Image (cartoon, rainbow, N blue to C red; front, side, top):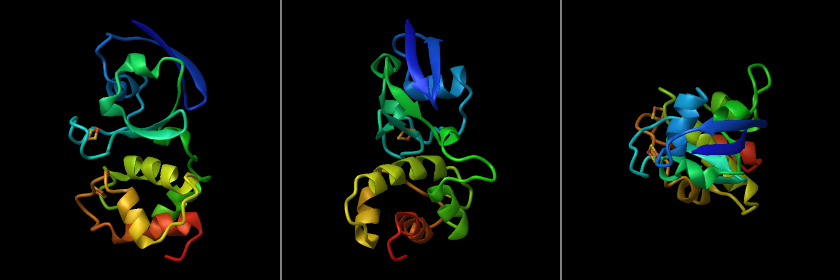
Length: 153
Ligand code: FES
Ligand code: FES
């Protein structure tokens, strides 16, 4: 099937099998390899991207469901030398080690911040409970999100 979507601000037309997953199309067709696959079973959050302004686990989205949508991956946020505030906060608070979880963590954190809900440590931990990190123990990730949100870290 042919699918049209806007990815990181660019209109794209993609030819893919109807049972292809959005995560695979992003990684394999568009080479956006900042979108990671940690489990493929909707548990780890490494594949999280934004679709029409909401965080989604792209391993749970069939490519046809993304028809006509706007998709943002980590490659669509900031740039070297002009980091997005969340990327800068992760850097400042040392909120990553191997970095495998980081793109998905940041896309989910963006959702959380843009929700406008008041954020404190508990709210950030709750909001990121669908994103797993095997390295950091989460403490500095929570600090980074609070820093980016302008709350007390
Ligand atoms: S790869 Fe999608 S949730 Fe783990
Ligand atoms: S930094 Fe390694 S999994 Fe999170």
